[in-house]
Length: 327
Image 1 (spheres, rainbow, N blue to C red):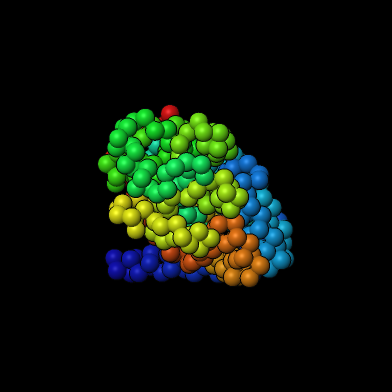
Image 2: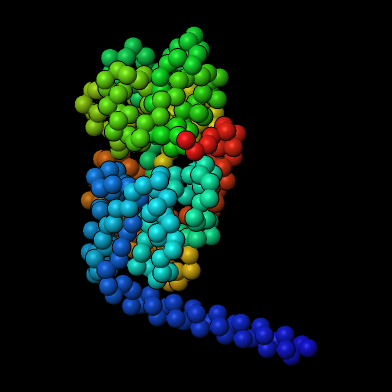
């Protein structure tokens, strides 16, 4: 009996060593043909900008083309599902935002993938601070003033978002809870129409990623009130966080991470992780990201896996507490 048990364990160990050796050999040869990075948003947006910047540097480093494929739709879930069902060989990757892997799965029914079990995290790429803004002509000069106005006129001040269940919507929900106020939520289909109506005066405020609004802030068209983040954005050092102003549990910043299909060999993941870290440490790449408002934030695959799990659980709790459902 013991002999059989030892034999079984020995066979399992042999299989494990063989898989490790195969993965190591694969990593030495990786990549030997073009790699696809799927982005679940249209070309030209901030995620696309980061992806193309990263792809150019990875090509330079690893000697193969890294091609961007934009697969937009369904809040990022179409692109995510495509990658989750791709071969786990390192040649199809997913540059995701927080939404597709930590928020939307709690809102949409019948999700075709599991964010925790269907992906192998490679690394966190950037963090994007979410900042609450109003038009520059607006007399409101702080988040506290905006909250006070909402107290005086509950459920009447129009506050835009990029859609139900997006980080801008959740930023609004968390701010409302922390401030004890209620705005009139006005969901849009994306940042562009929300910004257009904000600048046109149809809505009062919105909370968006810094890369989306930085040029409008620099151009004097938008006034930043507060950051829904743990720390101030280096491009907007004078804009306080909501936490600094006394509004607890209001973090709703966005982030981009690079994921591969589950069961991608660990040596391939490690090789990609090291290459992304070198790319983000490059002074030119780092400066371009920071100037756009994105903060480079590489880390180990294990750190990204732990972060994904923590973010998935946190946003799930918030979605349930707020009763947010797919519209």
